Amino acid sequence: MDFRYITKTKGVGGRIKQSPTDFQVEEIGVNYQTKINYLSNKNQAEINWQEVFEKKKSDTDYLIVDLEKNNLATTSALNQLARFLQTSKKRFSFAGLKDKRAITSQRISIYQPSQDRLSKFNFKNIKIYNPFWSKKKIDIGDLKANKFTIKIRQITDFSKDDLKILIDQTISQINKNGLINYFGEQRFGGVREITHKVGKLLLLKRYKEAVILYLTEASDLEREDIKLAREDLKKDLNFRKHAANFPTQTGYESAILNYLANKPTDFLGAFKILPKSIQFLFIHAYQSYLFNELINLRIDNGYGLNPIEGDKIIDGEVYLPLFGVHSEFSRGLAGELEKEIIKKENISFKDFYNKEYSVLSSKGDFRKIKTSVNDLKIISIEDDKDNTALVSPLEASLSFILDKGQYATVVLREIIKKEMIG
Image (cartoon, rainbow, N blue to C red; front, side, top):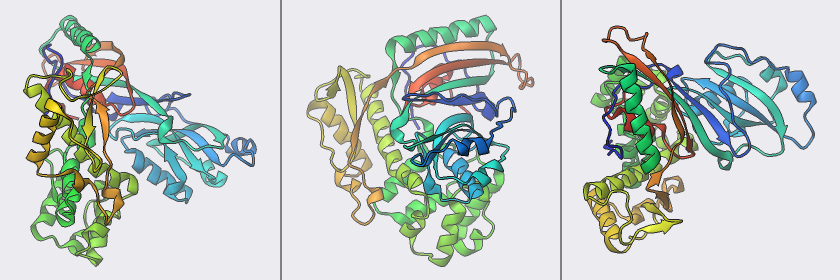
């Protein structure tokens, strides 16, 4: 993905997410804030489940807990929980998805769980704690913001004092000018960056191409066995042969392959094997890509993040379209730029309506072109003792708070200004 910068400082370089402990996320809800308590320091979450269930009232069907996970996507963690508790995944709800390669904490709800199964729950990379009962489940509207504590490693060519001065200068510019409200790399599928590409093919009802791309597009940053499995599948598209030995760590690919092994031409059906929460991501990712590209077009034409003729202004802030079937081109210069993006992509607004499968439809929306970061600060600058093969490496620890829907990588990109390995 192409991104522009809003700050003018030199980048510090370095790497994020060398270890999941380098990227920590705590959830801030409307009336709560979770804390990372266990996985970062190997404490145990001891809970007297008998006492918890004795406090349950007849009209409180939802058990609310804080979920802490290490190097797992939110959906993967909930899948593990559901399997262990021997209950449906539909009984779980959450306020927001959290990063995979990270240690994160978030609040979830479980509908009428089993006391016996909970009392036996013990996973190395998942902890649940702070249980209480509620009449209401946790939902998307409960999420307000996320607090990030992040370590940038492998920083070279700076003294500690010079590095602190440089990061402080970047922080000052961010606080003054705000941030470009890009969708971050996570929106586009991590190391493979294909979610939006698959989304466009689904939008155009090219289901076979979409599923094949999802299964076979490899990345040099993936594990070698996964990369080779994708490449081998691409050569012959023998779904039955590859279903038996495709690496299970890839996630949902094995389930899709097992479906296609029996129904090799039903590619829409294969896509429907994915959880609904995942299916939605593909069209949204393509909308996000178009949004980012519209921002880049404005910057490249010299308009920056400033209002131009035809912009939608709410409370003094510019909002750009997330294109959908109900979208209409803005008037004036803003509309001309929107038309340029749509023409380049060779799509139309009507493509965002799928009569055959409504999950692949979107009405459209608007999103601010700029955002802000709260309480951005340096925690420490230390020697990077885990990367001594480098010459005098340093690590910088930062913390900040972002409203929901904002991406930590947008903040980090302004500081690093180089390709971020993570």
